[in-house]
Length: 175
Image (tube, rainbow, N blue to C red):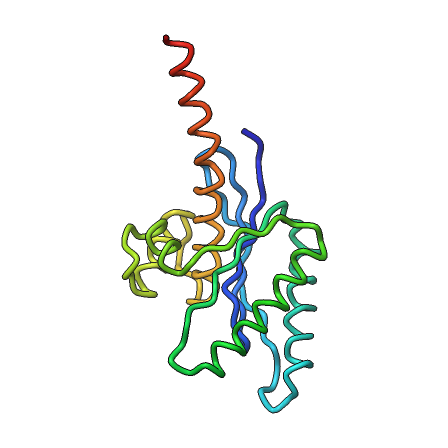
């Protein structure tokens, strides 16, 4: 199995988290994580979306991932907040696909299940498991941890078809 570099994104209009990991079989290696700020909320929405787009492009140019994963939008009580988050997510996806990256999408529930084992996990639980899975000295901030969780979830799901194919091949050989 070849080494793959994944970028995970936890989109937000104010703060977007990113996490970059290398995946080699079952081995996960932390590369980088952080946040991209959209700037002053008093600025117009187009400027803030542009800042997110530019920030993601800069991260992509720095770390050269081969695949991307992003958290899906969840429905907020406030429809306006959901719409704004969707627009931020769109700016991020545009930056990812402009670099010809394949983009996987996962719900927060699926990410939490993959990382912690339960979809009702708290942010501190996700942070702790990300810290353990990546063998870090301390947990990254919540946005960065969430993004790393998305990358780990994507890496695990990407391996599933390969593992299934290998198992089927083994089964066919044994018959």
